[in-house]
Length: 152
Image 1 (cartoon, rainbow, N blue to C red):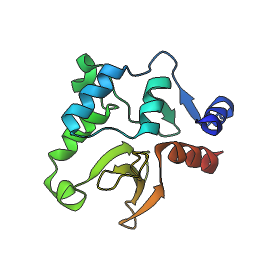
Image 2: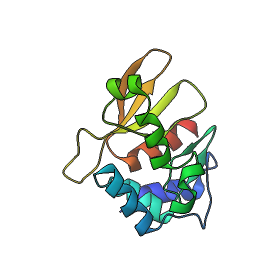
Image 3: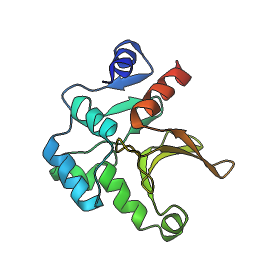
């Protein structure tokens, strides 16, 4: 199903995956229960098969083991909880689920206000320098492929 992405992940040097750090289904389910919605299928696939990755100057957020979630700033739920404490951010982007924050002037997040028939959330790019948001990819898988292509 994700053959093109798998091939890019096998051959690229711009993203570093760490085998053996895949998420477990029970961790994902626990996160989904707290969020109140199911994560997109391509992101769930990523979590179960790869789990995490370093992408240049940032890490793609993952789902950490529950016992480490409160201390790991690479955990999707940990970052989401922190963001909920930022009133100005929540009021401006109430349906944002942060995904990837490279060390720069951009931020990528899921827009949870809209879901495709396949269950995917679009991945949005927030340009911090110019203060605008635009759709970057229609699925998480497309997001990864696009990042790899742009940075190769």
